[in-house]
Amino acid sequence: MNFVARSAGDGKAGGRPAAPAPGSAPAPAPAPAATPRPPRPAAATPFDSREQSNFWPIAWGLLVASLILWGANARLERYITPQRGLGYWLGIIGGSMMLLLLVYSARKRAAWLRWIGSIPRWFQLHMVLGVVGPLLVLFHANFRLGATNSNVALICMLLVAGSGVIGRYIYTRMHANLDGNQDTLEELRAVAEKIRTQTTSIAFLPGLLNAIEAEEKRLVEPAATAMGRLAQFSTAALRATLARWRLHRMIRRAVRRAAGHESENIARHARRIAMVARRYADRRLDAARRVSEYRLYSRLFSFWHVLHIPLFFMLLIAGIVHVIAVNVY
Image (cartoon, rainbow, N blue to C red; front, side):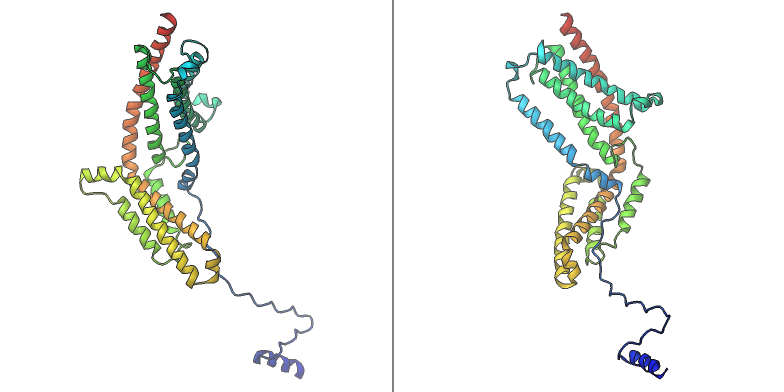
């Protein structure tokens, strides 16, 4: 007993630790000191899914622009004739694709057509057909003007295609995803507030949150005059790009300083920390900008819809007249 007591006292005094009593559970080992972990990316939001899908629209646009540039300078009249052969069938296929554009409108309005596919799938097909169809018709026409009826049809087609490109951009400013479901202002504000509260990952970077708030205010604060608001809207993309560049530069400097002075763990994960901070800043700016522009884009989309539908029906009439004139006369 005296040995056990003396051993226990030695363990308390800094000597050899006491042996466990027979039948008793061994004492748990002391927990290692906690080390700070690198921040994890925040949970995905609708803004992230839209940003991650930007690659394919850009690649698709570059491909179409390259084909148009090549076709306009390739002297296609030596190989393609609109009246027969490949040129004739390009016109038929392109015109048929543009007729299929009506299926998307019918699918949105008629619930009994759900058997032909979902609305998001038809919307994506609608965008593809709205580009490929006019492109085939341009190759059918050898990128040249012809008779009066064909010129009217060609001009109407170009107006509808150009209107569709503009409408697609306005649409993406009102929809987080291309799924046919329009965001509401309340949903956008809720997402923006959720992003604003996710600050734990970058709280150790001094001054970054204040810098983000200052850039948000500079980006979305409305101008005092109507001309100022118009200039603010027309330069929104450029100002957002400059704001991102300034914040990314600040993040690089802040992470470099933190890696050099604060802890070895931060230095080891500096690249990941910088990526998380940049992504957070970008999402904050994009969310604030979308909330501030929502009402304006809603109004523009309404005006665009009023213009686009009559242009499309003008194209249908001009196309029908062109087909009848070619095959009858």
